[in-house]
Length: 389
Image (cartoon, rainbow, N blue to C red; front, side, top):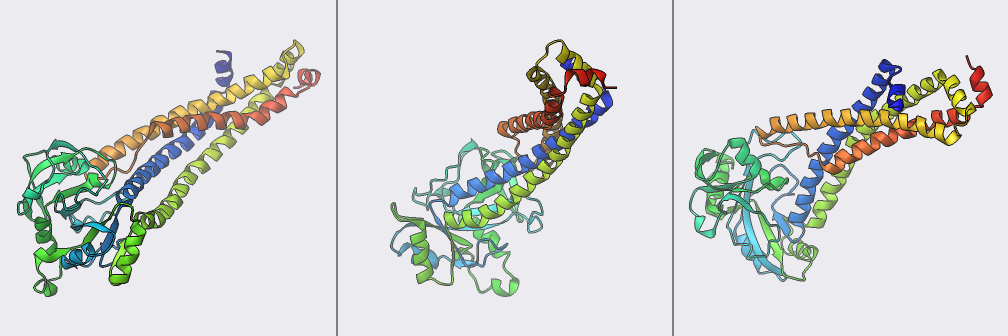
């Protein structure tokens, strides 16, 4: 109680200092949550690509890919070290939704269930309804990721129009917090039908929809490194681009690391300003209480006790700012995610680790910033302090 009374002697000054810390923690929580979401997406990509080789006509990092003939799948299957090949079609649900946001845009993915022959280790589970089966080829059915199901307010049995074609929703996947949450999975034949419409009209007549794919997922035989298979594909089919899990981590991981550093840096800059406010507040508070500190020292209070009391005061300022900043940060994250779910875009992920780190950092910052003024106070000569005016 005594410590709290000391903090409320100058309510405005203490309030402004707490506000400075709160703003920094708010920034750290918001930008940290954005970084968490990006990291989860990248980790999901790393797991997805870890045991396979993606093959396309153009670099997989480009916005679009030229179509591949299904005959390429036969060529790939004939190569040494290849266990299975899964042709697939991927495209945006809406060409106008190329997603200026940092989230994953809603996508359509078409493939034949079971064509991986059990080699795909990236597991997804069904929350409602059922998954696609090989028997669905030739029909217009879809399984939605959790974000898409929420965006369109769909459940098994409902219908959904994808690029002008009506599909029946047969299942909804459990949330993964990664890219599949924004994917509508459909049979390969249906995806080919939708994709051929995206090809310029002058070339459309020269291609056959049932012979198209945008990429091939190649599964190496057990014991064969994906990099080895990728090198073999480059040698045999030099016009194709390949991507392994290592390529994904190198290209995407480095960019994400830079982005995370920028996001955290913004929050830390705000916290530094808050830390300087604590130093200023504690220095002024100690100057005003010099005679009080001298009396404590004169009646037997040791330097350690004085130092401890003042550092606790500074830590409480940091904790108060941390609690306020975390509360407002959590509110902003929640409101932004609720607004984003309407469009299928969730940009933030506030984890318990992020919240605990924010509070510990704020408290530690307050204690650290108040240590130097407190140390100066603890070293005051009792007689000189009593004479201080």
